[in-house]
Image 1 (cartoon, rainbow, N blue to C red):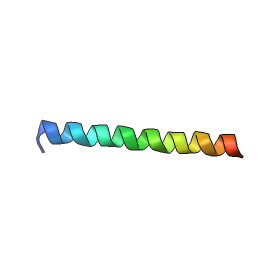
Image 2: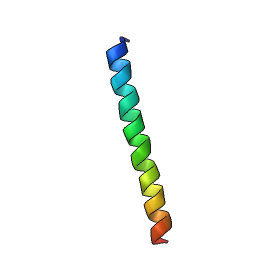
Image 3: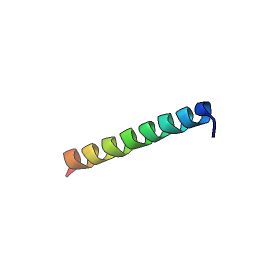
Image 4: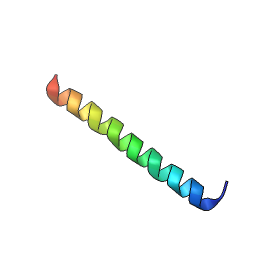
Length: 31
């Protein structure tokens, strides 16, 4: 696996994690 691909994967994971965190926060606010 080359560095560029790994970098992209890391970025995607960060974005994904951020979205999950936002979802949890939103649910807490709603409940």
